[in-house]
Each structure stands twice: as structure tokens, then as C-alpha cells.
Image (tube, rainbow, N blue to C red; front, side, top):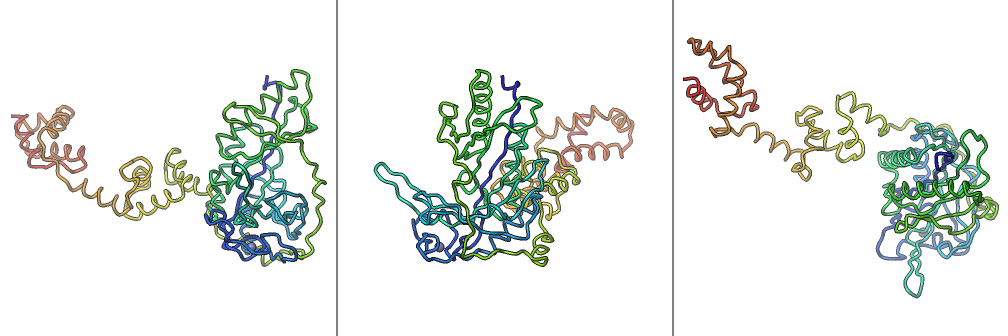
Length: 426
Ligand SMILES: [Zn+2]
């Protein structure tokens, strides 16, 4: 049934940025601070008359990210008030840049960006049995919002795209982008249309609070099926926000969607228009950064296989360990093998790995029970040399010992190998 319809899917990705201070005040940016309401001031508590001051580092990190994913940086950024009421937003509006965002357009892996905004996060509501508590440590934390065009043609492609965004943010060091902790959050806008239909459907369903990639995949698969079934049954789909229940495996309606103009946007009078001049722009665009796509190519050139590349690129600290092991004199594939495959090296430092490897190389094999079968194999594989030896050629013996050394990486005890050879060939 789903094959009768094609999917129209766009994403909104939110990421908290790593900065010392919050977006519009000097409070410490630590949304996971366990002591509630400690990193707060009149600005991020939303007290009347408090004056916001934009965080330039947050803005530059946001621009660096936007430029690195291929979005086009804008020279004019205007902060506006997005008006709505919610207990975790006591001033009654969120500061964001909807009409003059930090970047517009551009693409990553064939997916076009609509806009990239830098805004402020809200406070955190904690619901207990009989009351709701609010922690303002998260209020005003810099929040990047990445909005794509509805360009995804399948769900796996969307998941891969989000993983790449996550990796890039981590490589640039602009966000931890951890979905479990909530510093990366996904929203999907999904609808369906008949294959060949050019215009977008007249509705879309917004799926919020997607907190893992596997959740995303399951929720979207179900929603795609539900929408196709609804249309096949002759019913009409409506604009709404839906959640996903992992227990039932089904999506459910949460609320009908607010229209954009409900927010009554207007420019924030206390923040002047921000102009990005050429010097500022080139500071961002000429920064020397390493991106995951570049690292993939680099490792491929080193001759590493896809499995090694996937693991090393996906975990930057593992890649750094790989480099440190190489610095001790190992080849790329040896180093990759040590850090990716050998579980006993997982907790070991590069120097410890080197020590164990050296020990392995120097420790002699003296056990006849281990050496005899290796000597026998060498004898069987070198019948010509063996007959030379039997006819009195002394150097043939050295050759056979050499073969045993080769197959034991030099660890066999040469004297014992010689005595086993003499015994077997007597
Ligand atoms: Zn504050």
C-alpha cells in the first residue's frame, strides 16, 4: 500500500551549542547542571526590563557549522520575538531569527537546506505527581535550528543525514549533539503524494520529540503506512502534530498545528541588526577544519577497508588513538586492527599497546608441541629443499629454519627448530 504513494519528508534538527555562556546573558551554559536554578539571571529568567546581549562566540560557532555543512551564510541577521505562552518561557516570547537567519540554502549530500537559525532554548519542566517544577539552567542556552527542504525520498536516507550532521557538529566541536541527553533533537515533517505528483501535499504531519535514530526510523515507517492507508480508505489527512508510542508501535494525534502567523513575530527592539562584514565572513570561511567526509577519503587513500573507516570516522577519539599508535611505528592497517578489532586493547593506551606488541615479538616459542606441527608443514611444503638436505646440502637446513621463523613472525627458538628438523628428517 505504501508503494502507491511516495514520501515527502523534511527535517528540523535542534542542537544546543557548546559555549561558555548562554545566548543572551553571561550565565554559565551548562544545561545538565544538577543544582536546579543556579545558572540564572534576570535575562534568562525573563524578568521585565532585562537587556539581552547576543553571544558572539555562539554566533560564530553556528556560522562555522552552517558553512561546513554547505549552507550559505547571510550577511544580515535580525533577531525577532516569537510570541507564545508556555510555563518554561516566562517572558512570553523566544528570541530567534526567522526572517533573516544565519544561513539560507545550500546542500549536504543532495539535501537542500531551507534555513539555519540560532535561537535560545527554553527552561526545563519537571513534572511530579502533583506539581510541575521549572529549572531555568537550560533557559537561554544557544540552540541551533537546521531546517531542510522536504527532499528526503526514503527514511534511511534521513537517518544517515542526521548522523552526518551529528558527526560534523562533533568534529567542529560546536555541540556534543547527544540525542540521549537531549542536546540534539529531531522533528520530522512527513506527508505522502501520488508518484509523479509535482506539487506538495496540502497538509503535513509534524512528528516531535524524536530522541533516537531507531525511534525516528520506527516512527516514520509507521506514519508513512498510516497516511497511505488513510488515503486508500478514502479519508482525508489533516495538518497536525503526532507523537509515537514505542510500546504500541503507533503514532497518535497530539494537537492541530498552529499557523506560523500565530506567533506575531516582530523585531527585538533591544538587539540591533547584526551585519556580518567581509573580514568576519572570511574568518569563518577560511577556518581550517577537518570534516568526516574528508577523513573518509584520507583513510581510504591509506588503504583501510570500509569497516575500519566506518569505525574510525564515527568515533573521533578512536581515530586519535589510531594516529597515536601509528606514531609508534605501526602501519595504518596494523594500527586500525589494534584499535578497532582487538578487544583487549580497548582500555589500553597506545604506549601500553606498543609494549604488549613488542613483548609478543620478543617472547620466544620454545614449546616443541607448538613448534613440531609448524616444522612438519614446512617440510611438507618444501619437498625439493628437503631432498637437498638429505643429499648433504647444509644450507638447505638454514632455509627450512628460516621458513619456520617466517610463519611464527620470528618468535620460534631456532635451536629447538633445528633439533626438531634433525629428528624428523633423520
Ligand atoms: Zn542568565
